[in-house]
Image 1 (cartoon, rainbow over the protein chains, first blue to last red):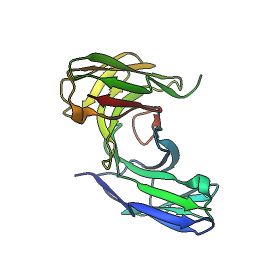
Image 2: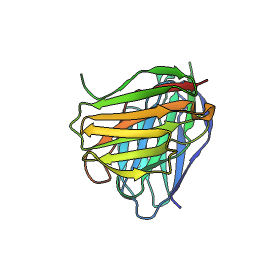
Image 3: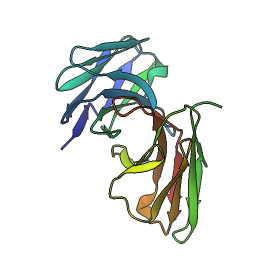
Image 4: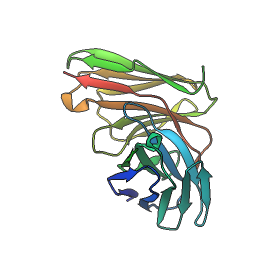
Length: 109
Length: 113
């Protein structure tokens, strides 16, 4: 069964304190792994797509990496505006995304 | 207007009411989706439409009825809902057959009383 597990469930950081979020997955034939950011009461906002092991993508303070079993979202010197829930999803079959439960990130000034 | 737009943003309905959620995408995509998001649970895929044809129905109860009149519009018709159906309902669209990112609307927060 296709499955995505994210850890930790919640993470509190001080401004400037770098850390990483984990996304472990099992899927039959990975077609893509996606990272989204979701603010309270809003829809998920697309961040990155990764397709193959070894691939990396960067955007401002965020960097996503991919191995054959997991993906990491590295946050370098976070700011309070980076506070959100970060969702990981894998493409499992034709136009079907399987999501994890997300990591709630709180960055304190 | 750009992106994916959902209306209404908030909806409170009784268990005997009939209502509809609307989604419109301005991205030229060929696939549209309905997802349900409940507290502490992952997003659950409900329906997928590709080129206006329903290609996925994830064992969703018949009290939820989707409609896709064209590639830009998607509806979710609701009737005789239960309190456990209260959730954030998200519409998304994407382009291509797979491995392409989905773009989401802001969602409709549904409360069933």
